[in-house]
Image (cartoon, rainbow, N blue to C red; front, side, top):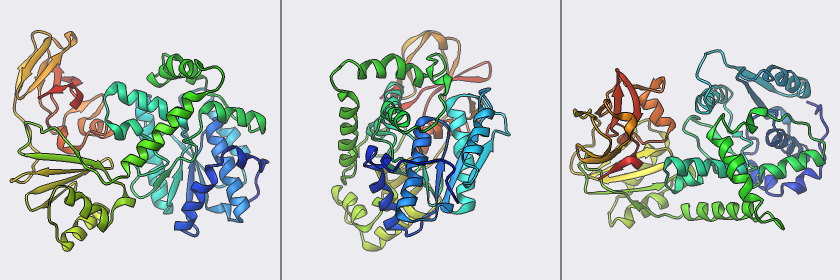
Length: 420
C-alpha cells in the first residue's frame, strides 16, 4: 500500500509523546490490528499522518491500519468531504459508514450511532485498538460540560490516553493527541501543508454547549496571559497528576442511599490493566476484609469475562459500571425493583418525595413525580439507554425520581439533584 500523500518526517518532533504511546502497544502485541476513526478535520488527519509515519519508520505493514469514516449526511458538505477522503486515501484500507437509520441529530445520538458502527466493524475484524483524534481542547471542553452537569473526578478526567469505552466491547481506545491543544495541531497542519476541512458548524455557538464553551469561555481564558499560553499547559499537568492519583489503590466512601439496604459503600476506578491479584487483595485489605485466594480469582474472572453486573461475596455486593468498581456492605441480596410512589406537583421549591428532598423548578408544576418503570422512554429512547449514555450506574437508575406530564417524561432527576 503506497501513500497517496507526503508526510514530513519532522512531524514526529512536533508530537514527541505520540511515538512512545504506539511503541508500548507494539511491545504488548508484536503485530496489533489498529483502526483509526477519521474525519477531515485537522486533528484527525494529523493523527493519521503520524500513524502512517510511525509504520513507515518501524518498517511495519500498513495494511493492518483500518481507516473508518462516518458520513452522517447532516451537513451539505459531508458528501463532498467523503469524496475528497476517498481520493486522498485511495490506496488505503478505508471504510465509510453512512447513517442508514434516521436518528436525532444531537451530538449524543450521532456519537452513539458512530460507536455502534465502530464496534460492529472492530469485532468482525478482531481489531485490538482504535485511535481517536481527541485533543487537549476537547478534553477541557468535556470536563467543563461534565462539571456543569455534575461529576466526580473520573468524569472530570473524562477522556484518557488509553482506556476502555462502554460502547466498544473488546477494542481498546487510544487517544495519542490528548496532550496537545487544537490550536497547536492547526499550526502544525499549516506548517507542513497537511490539508484539512474546517467544519463551519464548529463556530456556531447556538448549535451545542461544546461550541458555546469553546468560543465564549475556553478560548478567551487561554488568551488572557499574552506572553505564553500557560492555560493549556497547566490543564494538561492537572490531568496528568489526577491520572496518577487515580492509579493508586484507594477506595472512596460513598454516601449511603436511603433506598438501599446497605451500611457501607465505596467506589474506585478500575481498568482492565488493573485487574490482578495484587489490586483486588489491596482493595479488600483497605476494608479490613480477609479474602481467600480462590475468592480473589473468582472476582478477577467475574470482572474480566462475566456479563453479570454484580457479584456476591459473603455479605458484600460488588458492582461494575463505566470503569468504576463499587462495593456495598449488605446482609441481603441486592435486587433491582420498581418503587411505587407518585405525587402531583402543585408548587415549586424544595419538597419531600419519599426519602429525598428535591428542589422542584417552576416548569414542572402540574406534572406527576414518580419513580422509573421498566419500559419508560425519555428523549425518544428507552430510559435505561439514556442512563447508560449519562454514565449512571445500574443500581442507581430505578431510584431516580422523574416528572411525567401528559404521559410523557419531561425531566429526570439525576443524583446531583437529590438531597438525603
